[in-house]
Image (cartoon, rainbow, N blue to C red; front, side):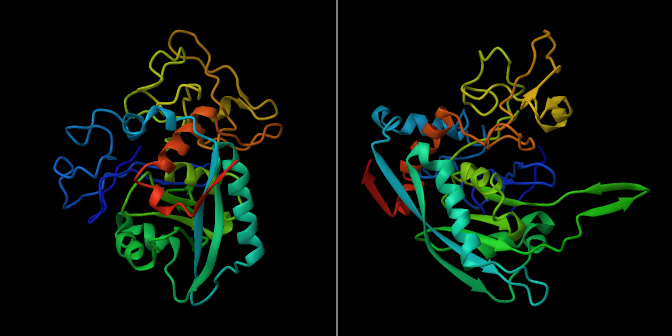
Length: 322
């Protein structure tokens, strides 16, 4: 993972998606706050704060009472406000039906976690910034953008245009990339998701980013080192979730048979074969033809717990018995 810095932000991970697969990079923002002195800032990047020795998922489990882990008896609903940032020219049109369909996609993905989303409204911002302007220079414009446009009573989803220039040629080598969207993982300061307008109806991108918003890592995360296929280190390596198999990452996507939704023939040093969950919302792989996108039960539990924690529960619109 590449590392960048953003001034005036609290310690956190920020996730974003790239061309041809969904992904994110870790960012270690600079801050004026000392994490070791602020009791309410406990979701720091791994090992960045002296008193935090594990990732934020472990911290969630440490803070929540045990009976909350599996409490799916109530459906909790979060309000979502879409803010459409229009460019002076060549702005992509966003209509109400597309936004309503995006909410349907989210609600389908999160129903097993007893989390739902209610459309609060759509606002248009004239002369808005593009996705390139927000992400250039190590996201220099993003903190001010967030302070200016985020709603403090809803999950704000910013829809931005991009310039469409995805490929460049240097020394006869063509490289292509596109940012689909990004969000911080469980962060007080930035309760938003930034999304490319063309990806609004992508059935993986928005649920993927919302997964980060509610505390999920990527399945192929390797900050502590490669997760073992035998799963003995699954609580502290990879995504810290034992129900998601060890995932070597999208670099090895050439081993995936997408008609079977299975990685075939790639082994670790001991000869054990990797069998990642190709169709997981938090993976980087292409969609499978025969398997719908899915979270695992433990991923739902993590998101449910994060949704009920103090870092997210102030946004809850309502809770209804199932």
